Image 1 (cartoon, rainbow, N blue to C red):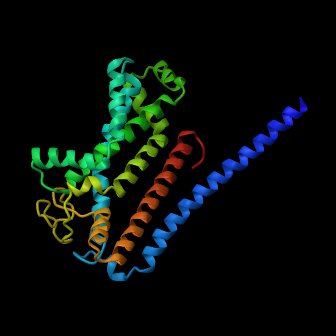
Image 2 (image 1 turned 135 degrees about the horizontal axis):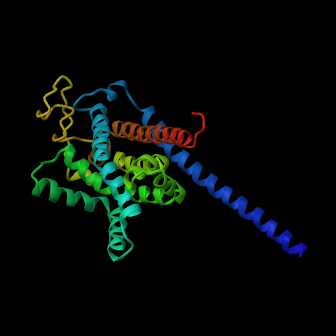
Image 3 (image 1 turned 180 degrees about the vertical axis):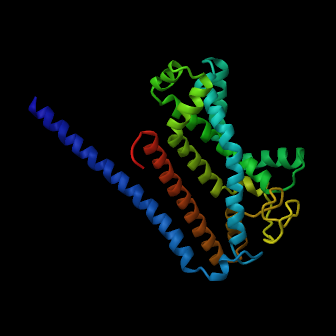
Length: 292
């Protein structure tokens, strides 16, 4: 009996060491990759690369990237959260619900190039939008919608049943219980889906090749939203950082600028992820009654 216990403890120690080694390996791999991209890009950076100029800089592309992800999240967050609420609280278990979940899973696994072609056919050909930020943002929303939907559904289902029942017992309606009790309680987990969705939007390139175009000529003094050079016109062609990196690398033009754009894109994704996680942690502490 003692030998079996000793053997089990030895196996447990060995497996613990293996798990730690695997975790350290992947953490070191991530740090090495991010460090190589960031350090390699910033080492060759020049001050003029960060200007908001038409060529030879990344300022306009950086703004286009942030603006596109912002528009995409404006579309995908309300739709994804509402879809997750429906699947978790309203949908009856049956063939139709299973079919909807299968469609969501299929949508989340679609190659981005296929979504880009779909966006081109629907938004550009059918609706006649032309290559624009809006067409690109809507295409990216198709990719990010399943992430937010499944995260919201899982977050609501992961809450204790007493949350919902206690709210109903106090006289609240079903919708009031969802909006004022369940959603605030699972908001930190929903933020995880938003972080993943934004990360995919920041780095997306294939879906944008067919939808956004490559315009980067912006006039920051132009506030006419109908003008093609107005920065906040969502229906203008726009080149994002990922598209700029692809163009520079494929055409072999300015390797240093491509490396700098890659470093800035990596920093942007890391900064957004860290900031969103800090805010999510703050919301979690606030909802649990701890001191902020």
